[in-house]
Amino acid sequence: MDTKHIKISDYNYPLPDDRIAKFPLAQRDRSKLLLYNKGTVSEDIFSNLPQYLPQGALMIFNNTRVIQARIHFRKDTGALIEVFLLEPVCPTDYEQMFQTAGACSWLCLVGNLKKWKEGVLKRDFQVKGKPVRLSVSRRHEQGTGHWVDFEWDNPDISFADILEAVGELPIPPYLNRDTQESDKNTYQTVYSKVKGSVAAPTAGLHFTDNVLRALDAHGIEREELTLHVGAGTFKPVKSEDIEGHSMHTEYVCVRKDTLEKLIAHGAAAIAVGTTSVRTLESLYYMGCRLERNPDLLEEELHVNQWEPYETHPTLAPVDALGHVLSYLERNQLTALHSSTQIIIAPGYEYKIVKMLITNFHQPQSTLLLLVSAFVKGDWKNIYNYALAHGFRFLSYGDSSLLIP
Image (cartoon, rainbow, N blue to C red; front, side, top):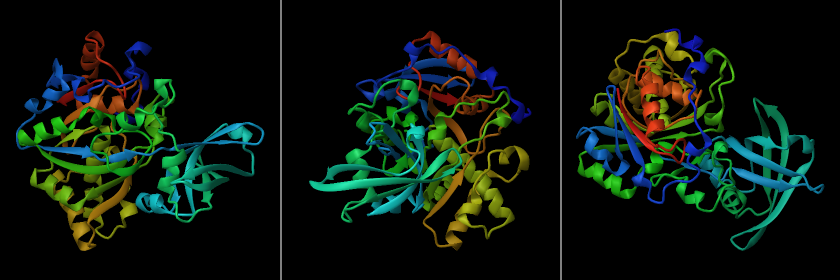
């Protein structure tokens, strides 16, 4: 299949607004679970997920945590300006960024940009009972975003404190509603830990502590990695062929012991969500690069959008992961920090992911392409069933377990 020339119009389906879940169920694990097993479709509820999984399998979760990435400023003229954090630029490390005090810089989207031609925007508020003045100034455009400098006048206050005080959680635009206080809890997975995403890895929203304990009791091994989900996850494909679509870059972190566990399982995993898929499959191509050149820097391991379709590597997945592990050991690293721009679409050959837990995605989206590639083109069978049987769609909707 010539993946680059796939027509995105072939991945359309009717999605009425009333089928988009605007809010989650009161009990996360009572969501419906669609079961797709080698072409056969049935359903259950999510809390029964463990019984459909093979004992001893390895399940991989994305432990990223959504940040309160929207900050609003009111100009003297009354104009409302929204600054939406995309990724840190100074410092670039997420952990360092949230600990930074006094000043930092981010790549941002700016809402109502035409009303902010120049000058400094300011906002006064309190953090931990202390007054703080936050000032922002805009530098230059960078891709689709803008370099924005943040400064605040209290050195005892971190940027994490700033966001907690004035940031707003960025729920998906297709919910067509304002963020509510309840979203601060419901739009996070119960295992979220590492701050950095501007969108939740929503396949994980169905998991509860009870389900996690049931997985353990069933003999499922669990590991976590981190991919910070960017705003590009909502970017529509506007080109007729997907060759014209530019995938967004997302930053990944995989610990050494997670790699060891993957290798012990023969480079086979159950992925929770498309973000875990993108990370796991990207590891394979990073390992292929390291086989050719063991001395690359971490940032040079970035996986390009079309790399899988242009390089056609034949390295065994377990060997590819072995090269990544050896790289960490040689460089005395406890985790791999890199990035990926991978697009997974029909024609892609999965290397590591053997089962996938995922929600139901937007029509004509790159996530639907990823699912289609996983089920070998049988996505309409799945989506027709979900539409006919009352499943709820998108971020706060129901779930599916896909076994190709």
